[in-house]
Image 1 (cartoon, rainbow over the protein chains, first blue to last red):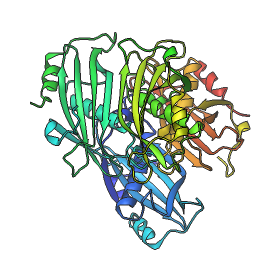
Image 2: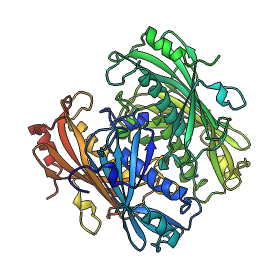
Image 3: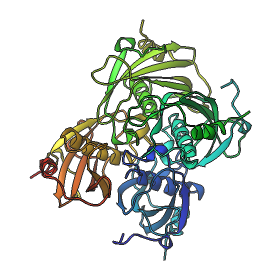
Image 4: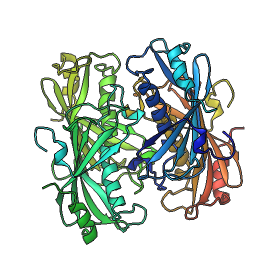
Length: 144
Length: 144
Length: 144
Length: 144
């Protein structure tokens, strides 16, 4: 993540998510934690809808080993948030996902977050190499 | 709330809300608590968008004095939820709001929830009569 | 639940729970939804610690079919909350759990909540009769 | 944060926090987001209890501008979590707080998280220098 906030062109796909009453903390804006909830939400939704993850039955699941977020501007309920998603790195058994959170009328990210998923065997919880169909789905989220 | 689940015709307005990864509990479906989050979210959003509530500055705010929910079927992330909203009772300083949570393709509520807001002075937190403009906005949510 | 708030003598066991920054909403007190989180937390913890529930492996799990809460006074982070727990009804395959939320120095409940668990087969999700060991554990939560 | 997980000696003060049913996600362990909730909870609680922050009335409040977490091992409800807190950097108007999350019987952190608070004027939301009493309170959280 660079010093200046990302723009919409930096992301591959977008999901709009309704904010919730409880997302605002006592300071009247989205709590810093909420951006991580949205990150989890869009990454897994993308994988589930692409048919390469079923949290209940898949033999490989993604566990978060590192995450981070930079906050540039406030967002607040009841405004919806648009989350841009991209993949920054694909390893043997890991993927780095990055998101930008945008107000509806803004081209500049209010926050940029990432996490690294290590994919593990659902039973043993030991790292396992990405399958080819999974790799193709996440590679499609790269931004040139 | 009657014994049979409500249908979409029982509600005045609808909001679609994206579910989140964390809404599913270990049993793989929306936790019972989530329906109350959605209730809070749609009631306050309706009031804010109608221009009769600003949580940061309004001199009257709504505090929940009673709430309840009946659960008929499971919903699950990543499917969106459609929340139907209606008003069942308008008192001197209180309003009973009721919602139904629907899967996208269903006419039968998966859950029905309600809460009673008592409107209070934002500083003293003592009950205060509803203003006329506020009353008109909530009366518009009645279903004949 | 009667008109007057319950007292500590009305509950069988107590758990202290730390409140969290995010529990307070923009009005500076515990959001109405939080009480349901605490209810879920103390009921399941009691069952897990008594050895009659393992959410990952038990062949019978509890699904909430109805819940409700009455709110009498505000609580707020960072004060801890003490949750009193009792059982009000034990049926063939269902249990009604009731909790009171108390400020640390108060004998009067700030809120009273309940939910009804129907115990179901973990796979089929069809109601199943309570096992004897489970029944004994929840019967111990009755208050004479 | 170094490659090896921190130990208890790396933190200045500890808070025990009860985990909640909803902290576990569908994989049966604390969701990655929960660690940020606990971070927010212990930092603000420390400041409030030390008498240098009242979120409702203070003229200076802390906004998070960056956060991050590394995850080494799983924790799970219903086990409590012990959160160690320290301060790593104190600037003119900012503070970097770091926490370690420990299982009750472990000397090795299951996760290490941080955030940077920039303290701003509560009304203008522009950075403001730390007051002396505030600075003394956070300096006390340094670990030599």
